[in-house]
Image (cartoon, rainbow, N blue to C red):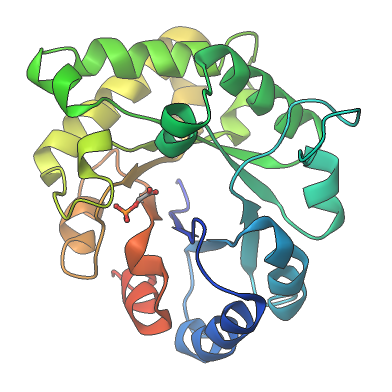
Amino acid sequence: MRTPVIAGNWKMYKTGGESAAFVKEFLPMVAGVKGVEIVLAPPFPWLGLVASLTAGKKIGVASQNVHFAPEGAYTGEVSPAMVKDVGARYAIIGHSERRQYFAETDDSVNRKVKAVLAAGLVPILCLGETLAEREAGKTFEVAGRQLRAGLEGIAAPDGTKVVVAYEPVWAIGTGKTATPGQAQEVHAFLRKTLAELWGSGAADAVRILYGGSVKPENIAALMANADIDGALVGGASLKPATFAAIVKFK
Ligand code: PGA
């Protein structure tokens, strides 16, 4: 049985005060929720704050990125050990905005996934095709390449800790959600690819999240699919009531 993960990616939104206010409002809303791993990914400066405000509440905290080196002369960067030190347990890696605006490549994504695992954190490995790639019939080719490259050199059982997030770029922040059928089709393909890499037992243990305009209105239909194990939520994770409604999809 795979425990679903519902993760909120705040991107570059919220001050420290707004982050604290979110947590204060959100905690009572999800206090009774069982059987779902809830994750919040605030901007770097608020990781420690959100981790301390959610301590003991069964809510995990994620960074939105890390550097792949444990330490070094890399001005402006933050290592996996540093985000762990302030209480994060997950790190989002390879988000399409990082690939698009910050020149992340399959290779840097792979180095980051390895560094995150080595630090004892859970990587949330993001991948997904652009609209042009989908229209050119390259969805599976792109998703498969990004998955294999992101996991290069990583073996099961360590690898099964990785959470994969399928996020079609054309669905991020656009209000266009992949239909549950479109998402399930890619998720099943990703699980088949994982089975080719690690065997079917290991593939069955990996959580594969969907991301791209997830809202309270569409989460249940997405979650009804066999290979959709949760969601990575951007815009709809910024308001406590909206994100809580997604967390309570059942
Ligand atoms: P969105 O973003 O929910 O605002 O589409 C998803 C993401 O970027 O993870």
